[in-house]
Image (cartoon, rainbow, N blue to C red; front, side, top):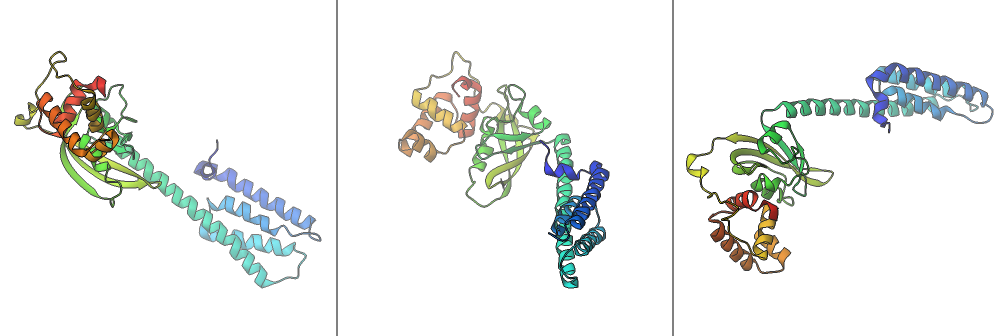
Length: 300
């Protein structure tokens, strides 16, 4: 389907200007033919708006004055310079308005193209996350860093790779903000890494979103073995409640939200987390997310 802004593509300049001239000529002939009956001067507005996307302001002004003069020439009404002036003002104003819209659109498209080029060629991983916590856009560096199964990050929950970033997105009711943090991330193959994240929240079509730049940093040796490795045969079995709590944790829900989802008190959720910490041998929620991704992936 042809978009309206494609009409003012620079490659269409000659064709659009020729078409506008022909339309103005046709309107002038029709206006002359119907002079005793009806005035068609209003229709000069359309070719002027069509041509305005390729003309400078003085040229739009000249076209508006010309259209008003033609309208007056073939009008059955008495000549009035006031009426000609208002017609010229209306035609020129509409033309200038369209020209400014087209100009702003071109600037926006050019800026988006430059930004897209910078994002795609950036050595840093860049992602945007929608209001549901799903990756909306990701550059090649982000795909290489997180190594998702299937090779595509788009549509994947960010909580599976950067749980702390998902928690930042949940501040959607707060004012927009920018911040940075160091956190542990998870790759699709189960490996973990330490990264620096710069992120900011914003709104698109009134929906909260988050954009983040992620860079890999060296992981301190003391932290590399902070979560004990567990084979599938020796890992602890989980109850149905523990499994659901683990699933909701990976989705980025807080204790209060998990309690509401399960229909239990928040203290029961905390006790469940203590049981999970004991069974998996970890001490923090971030470590528990890592265990969930690495050892209980099929339950998620």
